[in-house]
Length: 118
Image (tube, rainbow, N blue to C red; front, side, top):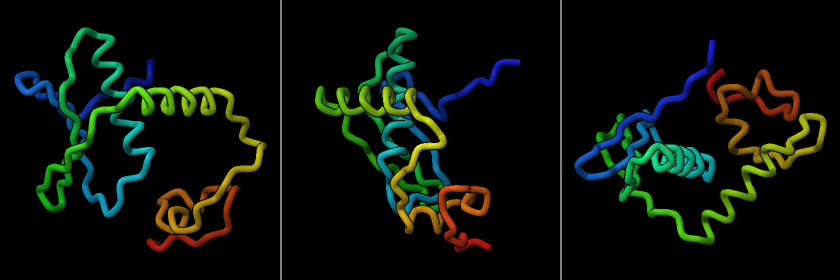
């Protein structure tokens, strides 16, 4: 069975792609990359995307995100190449604050930080 991925919301009239999150205390670059990846997939399928946004469900707020610039697109391409070449045995940079708030930290072999939710 194929592992399918889905976008959250595409408003065809407004040509707006919306990624829903329950709570966004901080928008990380990974959130932005997720939105850009969805945007490029939609564009490849022939849909026009003119606006990007996060929707924070806990506060009922829309958080607009700027469309990627040429520099952003190059950065995203570099990230995808790094991701493609990722080797799980290589050392990685650890963000202690992010690790403490990660729901998977107790399963991670890259950090000893305790999850704040435990």
